[in-house]
Amino acid sequence: MLERKRTRGAGRVVRLSLLIVFVGLMVSVIIVFNKYQEVYNENVEIAEGHQFLYIPTGSSYEEVWQQIDEMNFLIDKKSFQWVVQKKGYTDLVKPGRYRIEDGMSNNELINILRSGNQAPVMVIFNNMRTLDKLAGKVAKYLEADSVELRSHLLDPEVPGKYGFKPETFMAMFIPNTYEMYWSSAPKDFTDRMAKEYEIFWEKRDRKLGKIGLDRVEVSTLASLVDEETLYDEENERVAGVYMNRLEIGMPLQSCPTLKYALNDWTITRVLTKYKEVESLYNTYKHKGLPPGPIMMPSVSAIDGVLNYENHNYLYMCAKADFSGKHAFARNLKQHNRNAAEYQRELNRRGIYR
Image 1 (tube, rainbow, N blue to C red):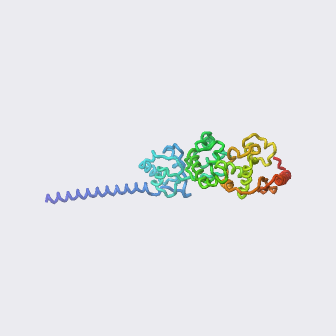
Image 2: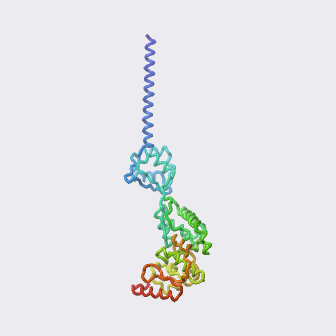
Image 3: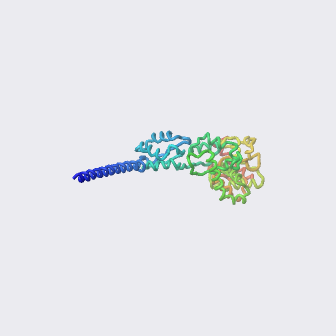
């Protein structure tokens, strides 16, 4: 009898112990399941589909969290903070521009931020007149502001690091659209442009020997072509005029170089007094090419020089119909007639400058 009571008592203890273990397991499963949900369930809700989070260089986690909190795309902010601690992101903050997608989990979001997996920006620039203006344009896409970029681009020591002089540095920048990271520093930008410059010229170098100019000389001449023409269809013919003049040692007599020398691009009518300006960029006074590009040449103008038209024209003048196209001439007599016709039209329209 006593033995039966002991057996029943032991059975109750075992059953109770098993129940406790079972309950403990269930609680653990529930806790684990909840934590799993906190890590892997959707925790980002963005009506527009996505937002961009910008983390400036040197930001602390507290500053990052303040931004995230203000953007208000987290469904459960506490669970995000918990996963942040577990994944050690507080000590792994990386600057950049991050694309936050609707439906992301805490794990996905933190992995992107922790790894520095930025969403690139498309940096777009074309025929900029000066490095100063280039800095202002590029600053719209990158973390670095225009003051930082301008200081870097105009530093007289920088061009030499890439094999250029300050007056030829503009030739290194090829107009295009470039995929870059928002956090790129000014030096990162010029490093990238130097690489793109080599890629660009790799396919064109074989033509340099045929025309007798080097890369910078082509870009310099192309900058004159760009300023002279409104239509790409004229690039090769205008380039041919300049090449003919270079070949016979005739001054280029390029009106855009006077505007550059005078730093006045509003000039419509090139007066005789303008041709007396003292500047190495005055191609009425100095034979050959100016010291460097007078602006950032377009790709079409560069290719226009490399494929310049082989003709006998030595002169060109804007057409009197103000179409933006040119009247070309083989001799001075013919050119003077074209020029007189254009000047009469300027007078008729009241344009004296």
